[in-house]
Length: 94
Image (cartoon, rainbow, N blue to C red; front, side, top):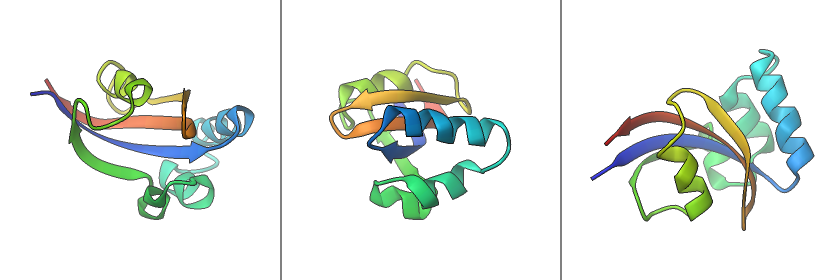
């Protein structure tokens, strides 16, 4: 069974999500600091860390990214019913 570990940042606005991604990529913010400051998910208090999960445990749009995009690369904005996510897959086992 496929499993992955990921961390994410959840915000309501796509433009804000893009700005945060830019700040991380420019080195102005770490992913952890950005999650602490901006994420509306409780995981933000933990640097956005979601732990390990299998297929079928996350919403489809989120899962599509986690099980297809490269590991250790920031993806997004990814829109779900919850808002806009920046997602970083930290490990994956197929």
